[in-house]
Length: 273
Length: 83
Image: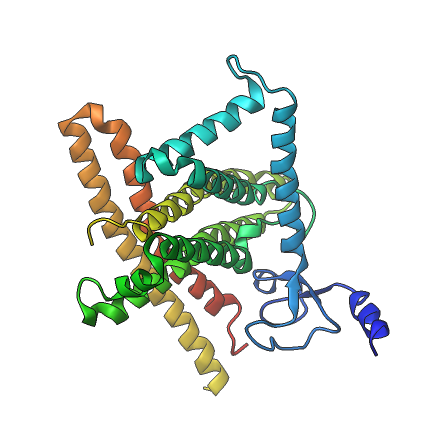
């Protein structure tokens, strides 16, 4: 017991579990696969909402995304120039200026210093997460972290907590409870449903778009031929798939960010109502 | 027909209906949004810079529910809980 069982649990090997039906490497059992890691041996069926499994491949991909973003930031910081920017600094300044303009248009210039960094961080993380799954590396665990519902739901819950806290801060506790009963008291259930469906739609919109792109890539990769056709045939379709993934990834990252900023603006609007 | 076969059959038909409904809804919605955007650009070509991002945002939001339905349809086809 005690330390011995913890060591035994931690050293338990990674298990690769398919979503539906065990075994087989055919297409249908590879769609929802993840490398699991549980405290101890994985149960055969999911034991509940907060089951003891961790998707290790998603966690590792998230670390890689964080390493990329921090690496870019440190690289730019080392050679920071106040003249006309070039290279990576130009790209990061473009992204930062674009998002900050959007924030100041929606919320006014006074909130820029507090909400701007949140929006830029969210946008960069989601953008690079979406794009990293398009890189065709021969690791079976290489995929976008945002194609896992856990990542997107985590981001959406973080946004939900931020919005509710800012709302309480702007209105006070009594005003926060009271605003659910505006403009008519019998709209209370509709207001509650609306408020709680926002993080769900945020999470599922991002997850659905990126997961559908990953399924498309998986299916296109198994578009068969023989001989030279096996090499040549998938390429145009794969190019289309990557093009669609680039477009959808960018649009969805921007939509997540702009919806977050809009929700913050709605929740902290103290005039009118 | 076994119960298991019926469950799989039901799942496949449901997936088809989900995807069809989602495609129709997304098509109609995106068509309306893009049509109004094109009208706006035709009326005032200088407004293109502010109309286009709004159009893309609207398309992204409209397409959210068909894509959520697509995820459910994929689960029904490939990872049916009835195996």
